[in-house]
Image 1 (cartoon, helix red, strand yellow):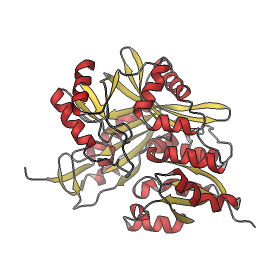
Image 2 (cartoon, rainbow, N blue to C red; image 1 turned 60 degrees about the horizontal axis):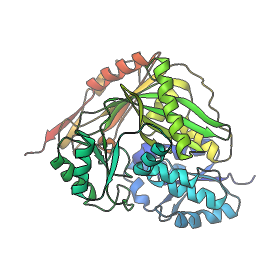
Image 3 (cartoon, rainbow, N blue to C red; image 1 turned 90 degrees about the horizontal axis):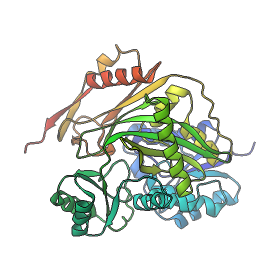
Image 4 (cartoon, helix red, strand yellow; image 1 turned 90 degrees about the vertical axis):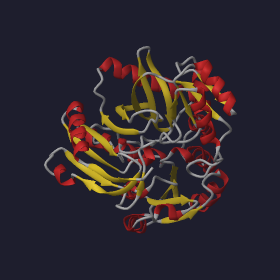
Length: 421
């Protein structure tokens, strides 16, 4: 019997949670390859090391910021006819994967669309050129230019990096001094969170007053397939960390449809022609406005809650698509699910978590995962990478799922010894 074809992931998420897509590949009968610049990033715990040993067919070293390096590292597999596909789970490597797939003749997203989606400025410019409603924005290349842009747009405004993910570096600024200070913080390091070179400058844009949803889409040869709309909860300003999601949305059908159409219009504008997309939309008094386009499946626990609610495994079906197959988006359950993230109440040292035993008395809780160990230095949440764990609940309706998730999150609390001022 011939060997099963390989399937390559160019980097992946952190910890054991980030390695779950490799398990999905194995479940599909594929041999998972992990293309990485540093395998040590994924061997930070006994659980993660065991998961890699059990699941990964091979780790493939390459400069994962460079598509030529990744292409050449995977070419031996492709030339033997043993490479079914290549995929990115996180934003930082979406353009590299698109270019690699094109070079090796594998299914993949248009490289041009991948580069537009990866850069928030290019996304804004492209969507505005197509007549879509976007926040007012400016590209600033100096602290003074950023302050002047903010004065023109109006306060408060949002200042963000062009290519980070997980709300890293996104901040609400209320004065010109705050804008200049945040510009300096964002440009102090020329490298992003994954070691790539940052584009010049920052994005200064209008603060959209409204609530946020995300629209989950899988673009197949038959066209965009709408999976659904997710309600999102954010932490307090000045940051924009995500602290919870509920699927499907609780919004009335006309509002849900308006959000979905805005996302589909944005994908069409940038030429997104293949694979998963997670499009963030702010619902304002003037209608839906685009926040950003992520050319990959929804991150954190969005895929998990979609699966709990509908039976659709978005990552697995996107993988099937990238391997040249036909995704199965059949809805097998009509339920709802919600996730909530655990955060530190203050900067300091984590002493543990209180209340986990109480969760056993909630029949709706179906997953609890704590990432941080006692003794870890933690901080008040500033972006999605700061969360300490998550929980997931399932219920019959979105409203019930959201209420039970909020209840569970109140029971499970991080105990932090504050750092002396």
